Image (cartoon, rainbow, N blue to C red; front, side, top):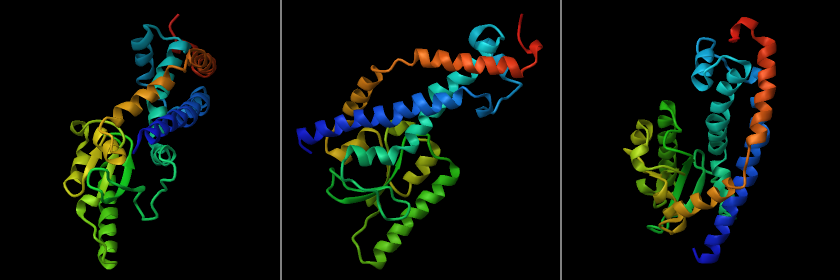
Length: 242
């Protein structure tokens, strides 16, 4: 990959994050967060969390205790995870998804020059116990298909590619997969994909530049006000402190 290609991919990353992640978060996620019915409320904990956060039990403190975890963690993390494959295809224009079941992308590994069959995951804690068998079964099916068609396919030619994180952060579920097929994460994954050792940090930095464009303060205050009003109407008056 030459410098022109590198710059193009980094610019694509900025566009993707701005258009796909930020817009989805600002429009879809915030709209849903303003509605009380979108939450699964634990009545044993909500008042405690409201007081822990604000030192008081008011409709506004209740609203903040619900909204902050949703908008600052859960919703945007889910959005990013769901768009992992689309992110790679848009960054690397022309890289299509794989037609092989259970494989997200196929690419030539910059480290060894071999074709890789890769399932994409967003972060080091984004699979559960049941995913382990599913992923291993998919890779073994690829192996069987390769044998049937006399293809030169090695175990290391199938991998799970994790977009961010460190090897030491991988969950026990990923480690079980890594005992059979390689799990490549963060810096190493992006290096294999691009041939640039520090591309992982470069792409993190340009996405950080997009973050500097965003000020969601007013939007956040608007949805807190909307949810506070609904909470005040729905919850019994004695729920709140005087």
